[in-house]
Image 1 (cartoon, protein in one colour):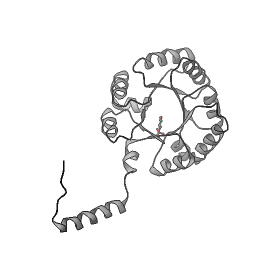
Image 2 (cartoon, rainbow, N blue to C red):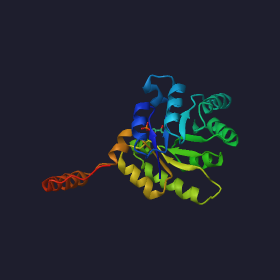
Image 3 (cartoon, rainbow, N blue to C red):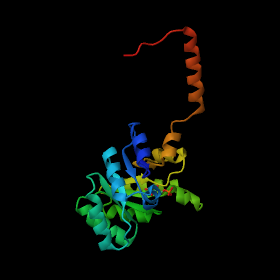
Image 4 (cartoon, rainbow, N blue to C red):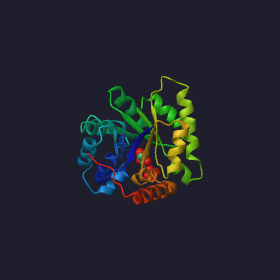
Length: 220
Ligand code: E4P
């Protein structure tokens, strides 16, 4: 399972990349707006920190303009992945850019039918938004199960299932159980994955017992 981080905050990415667990980054226009910085500069900095795919989303909605923005964004660095919305124009642009050898992440996916279209359009990644489905009373993880099952029926589909809109660690565990390729994690959720009260309690007991020995372990 690959871990992407879902933020445009360069300091957060720097900090999380140091864990050695970060395989890529996803941004979106809302996350980019939060930084208050120039988007191209931000993407360039992220690409220099994380060598894996870094998603940068177009904000055009019409095919030709999407292509112009996608072609400009991909010049930022070799690992830029162009993020396109799941619309007829977005999928058309996905096919064109994918045929040119550009990685494309198709975003705002809320149905298995949409995911089939993205795979046929040659997307490198499909981003189903599980949290936003949960928010409207549908189980977002059911969609992940459906997409993983459908894609596995067709070896010619090379699109990776990138679970997006993750809200908590259970989404990550479920994504793993279902065999999703990638999870994109808000920094808070990545940090939550480490935690368990029995780990803290166990470590405190081990250290307290060790302290009683009065010994030290040599360090190189
Ligand atoms: C990632 O690619 C998506 O843009 C992101 O996960 C959306 O998350 P949200 O539903 O929490 O905004």
